[in-house]
Image 1 (cartoon, helix red, strand yellow):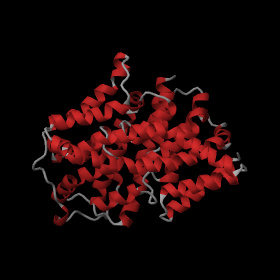
Image 2 (cartoon, rainbow, N blue to C red):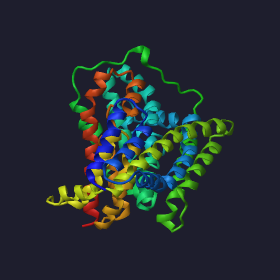
Image 3 (cartoon, rainbow, N blue to C red):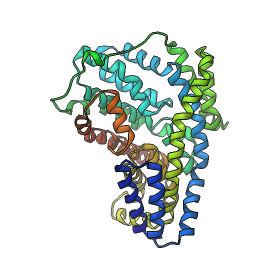
Image 4 (cartoon, one colour):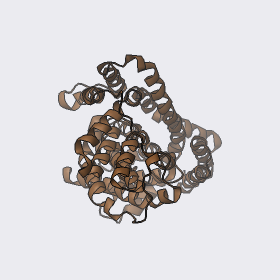
Length: 416
């Protein structure tokens, strides 16, 4: 199938998403048009779309079960307790580090990045009012921390990338740890210094930080700790515990540690609601991934990169960047890129773990564009005006580029 047909389908999906048409239907229609425009019959197009969905089905199952841990962390107050404790311990002197680290940790232990920002925002805004820190600066710091946590997390983007490369999830999380730390330092100590001078400040009415009734930090961190321990059994002791078991087990252990069993139903309902949205989105991304995978677009990309020194290495992060830009979503970007380019990347001699990791980091570069929900959700929770939110895009992109570059450099260092 021609690369042009796949590109036509992808561009159609992008235009529809920008026009606020449902991303799922936009991707399905883009896949259908892309297949036909690429020169294959309607039945064959449908078969490729179904095949693409089949490829992501195992990951969808694992993502749905991950909702147990995510729901428990949010609905029991564990996520708020963890963020409040970190900010309180680091104090006002290190407010940027505290806010970024809190968002990074929440995302790293399995909370969605937008939910992590929503969780940290109240205490960040309170500190912003007290210390006269502009809202846009606080939002950028939270987003930067969330992006850093997202490439080392058991979140849908990492799960799907690992699944499509048939790589161990804990290994994919671990190899991006150094880039995540570098990205955190870049966010806190470098990019924050280049923010525009004219910004809107936090008002008293926007400050609200409820700390009453939250579980202790030790009890709150118990669930994520159990999850990480179970996932680490494979690389440490050769005992494989699938994320499908480890993630819900961590959630149940956490709710027992916090003695909030009465909130189990509410936590499960919340987790399922959040993950169901992702699962349905993955069906749409699976259809267009099936079309892209069958097209010659991979050969076109390799041809464009052939004259560069690291052409075959760069296809992983660049595919993540391009697909996240198309969908304005880390999860969708990582899904399409890993589904479409995994075979090409593996054939180039790049290991499954590093291929998944570099795609995952690349998917953070442009996942914040305005045609995605993350852009608007983060603006809303901090009451940042759309014009001011748009001004953050170059800074967010710079953070994503540091993460992607850090992943590539780490790969080159550890595989030289």
